[in-house]
Length: 548
Image (cartoon, rainbow, N blue to C red; front, side, top):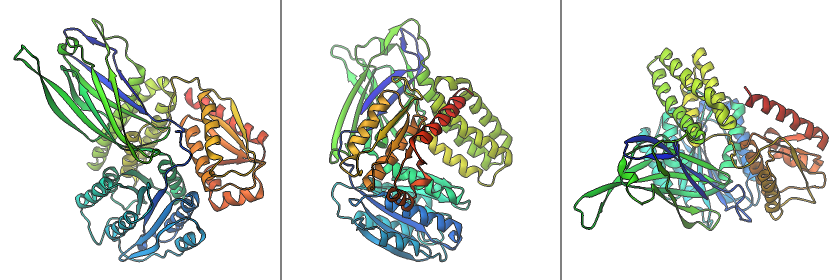
C-alpha cells in the first residue's frame, strides 16, 4: 500500500494563523503478488415477501444464480429466504458443485410479511459457523420493504451490523423498489463494513451483483485503521470525507520549560480496501505559528490493517510529511481541489436530502445547481473522476425537476457512491492513451494461468493502455477463476475510462458465458477486427465526453 500526503496550498506561512486542507491518499496495487485470492463465504438473505412477486423476484433469482457461478470451488455459500418465516434454502456448502444450488434458488416462492431481522440473523449465524480457514465472510441482505416482524428499530439493527463486523462478518444491503427505508439500509451497510445499493429497476439487479462480486473478489486489506499525529500548532477543524473518526489531545512537556504544548492525535477507520483501490481523505486544518517553530513532521501517518492476501497478517506502515515553510502559501494544488469538490458533493447531497424531506424543492435545486457549477468549472483538472460525479449530479437534477417518486433513494445512493471514492480515476503519473492492446490466449484458462494474465494486463496499464481485446480463439474452457479474473480486469479498465472486449470465443466458452450471464457484463465481438472497431468507437465517444 502506498501513502501520499499533500496540502491544498503547499507552504506553511510563518507567523500566521491559516486554514488549509490536507489530502491523504491510500493506494493499493492492482495486481498484488498473490497466486490466489482468499476464499469467500457468502450469505444471501433474500426478502421473499409478497411485494417481491413477479419481476423483482425473477431478477433477484437470476442475479443470485449468476453470482453462484462466478464463485470458485474454494468459496462457500449459504442462502436464506425470509418473509413471515425464515426458510433455509441452502445450508453452508463449498461450491464444488453448483447446479443443485442454483436449482434451489430457482424454487424460491414469495409469501407474506417481512421478518428482516430473522432472515438476516440466521444468515449471519450460518456464515459465522462456516469452518473454512482464512476466509472473508460477507452477508448480502436484500429487501424491498420495511421490517414488519422481528426487530424493527434502526438502532438495534445497526448494532447487529456493527457487532458482526467486529467479529469479521461484513454486511452489504440492497434495496429494491420504492418502499424500503434507505436511511436504515445505508446505516446498516456503514456499520457492517459493506456496501449499499439501490435497485430502481429489476433489470439492474444483475449489474449490482456483478459490482458487488467485483468488490469482494478483489479485497486487499481489512479493518484499516489510520492514526494521525499532528505537530504542535496543527489542529483538525473537520473531516470532509465521510469517515468515522475520533480526536484526542496529547501533551509534550519540554525540559527546562514549564510550558505545555498540546498536540492532536486523530484516529480514522477506513474499513476495507480492494486491490487497485484509491481512498482519499480530506481534512480541513487550522495551523498557527507553532507549526513553523518545531522540527517535528507536520503529520505522521500510522496505518495498520489485515492483509487478506498474506493470510490475514497484521501489517503496519508509517509515513511522515513535512511541507515547506514560507511567506507565501503557494499555488493551489488541483489534485487536492478535486478531492475537496468530491467530498463537498457528498456532503451537499446530504443537505439536499434534508431539503427534499421538508418539501423545500427550490432550495434543493439551488444547492444542486451550485454543486454542478463547481464541478463543471473544475472538470478539466480531472476529467474522469469529476466527469462521473457530474453525470450523477445532472441525473439528480432531472429527478428533482420531475419530482420523481424515488428521489430521496437516488440521493442516498449517490451520496454513498461519492463517499466511497471516484468511480473513475485520473492517473497523474501515467500518460493514458486510446491505443488497444491484444491478449491472445494459449489453451484453456484456469486458476494457474490467471496470475500471468493479470500481470500482463497490469503491465499494459502501466504503459498507459486502458482498452484491451482478449482473443480466446485457442481456448475451449474457462473455469471460475478465469471468470473472476476477467471481471477484475474489466473493473481495472473501466475505472480508467476504458473497456475490455472478448472475441473469437468457441461454442463451449459461449455456453459458459450464457450460464454465468457474462454476456450482460462483458462485451463480446465476433473477431478481433470487430472488437477493435468497437473499442475505437468507445474511445472516440469517451474523448468527446472528456471535452464537454
